[in-house]
Image (cartoon, helix red, strand yellow):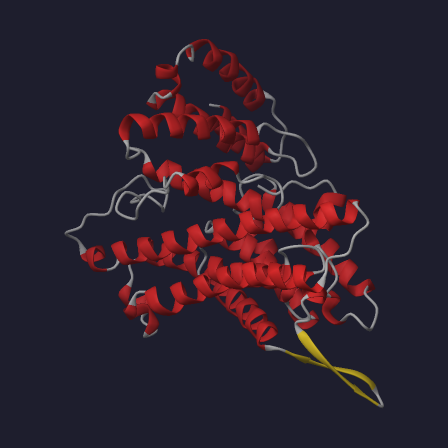
Amino acid sequence: MALCALGISQRSGVKNLDSLQHYQQALPSLQKLLRSTQDLSSDGALLTHFVLLLYEIAAAEPQGSNLWSQHISQLLRIFILRHEMYDTEPYSFLLWWVCNIDTHALLCGTGNGELVEAMLQYNMFPSADNVVQLNGTGECYDPLTEEAHAMPAVLEFNRKIETLTARLGLLARDLRQEYTRFAQQGLKASKSCINERQRRVGELQNALRRTWNEQMPPYIVLGLRNQSLSIRARGIFDNSYVLYRASMIYSHTSMYPAQRLSTSPYLEAHSMYGVTRHFSQNSDEVAQSAREILNLTREIVNSGHRELRFVVFPLFMAGFASHAQDRQQTMELMRSMETESIGKNTEATRDLLEAVYRQQDEADEWRELGLDVDWLAVLGERGIQLI
């Protein structure tokens, strides 16, 4: 009822306290019911906390506080208890969605990734065979239908990309914590330290590339995505596609502050006219990834599927890394996605991108493309929480 009331309020543009009242009524009732480990591991507890998490995400104010992280922590406890009981989670698709939410929050610096870290540590990420409801319709695909040849491979490919993205987010968390410790002590990272950081990043980059090049379903490699995949399977693959591209951009630009400067992604050739910058293969990979994200997002928007909100964060990463001439297109696509946004997350993402652009514009002539601009720092300074 809280979600329904919130949806009506957001659609109408009229503030309504009914949703908050329903939500506040649910919390004490839930606490009274959860008196034992058996209660906490029940289907009812799992589903209730999942719905409460969705409410917190939908109702979140970009610069306000909310309880989404508490629900993530509680869901982690529930999933571990249920793992001990069932070994394989009966609601694997819910576990997958919660992992996706936690990974997104981790990449945005909003969360600490405790849930996905535990899922990786205890090998609890659901297999592709169990995750059959990723499209959110509540319908399982029938292995005897036309999807049978494509869906298992697409799901497994998605699982591998999602898992590697979670590992990337956890590594970024650790590297940023290390960077902060150095800064607090007034220390500057040595060349060997920077090389070690890049080695760890490079390992994940190579794992992502191998997965992309070697494990993508062969009929997609041949460019037969639209012809070979059903609408549902195509949506899952498109999620993998833009997430891979966003992860590659993130790995080159956002693992820790000033990454693009400290790792020297370009060579400087001095001439009588100043400095000419010859961008390396890494910069080419970033530029290509940004173009591919923009192209697919444009296709999604033009086809009227603005409900496919998985493109919002990749679109932000593409906008962050794109040249100035692509900014207008990026902002137009982001505004288009706002029409079907859940809550204010897409609007907050656009506001953040505009703030990043302003800082990039203020960068001096020696810092082409605003390479020193740390969008996560901008997010923190503005008090924005992206979930």
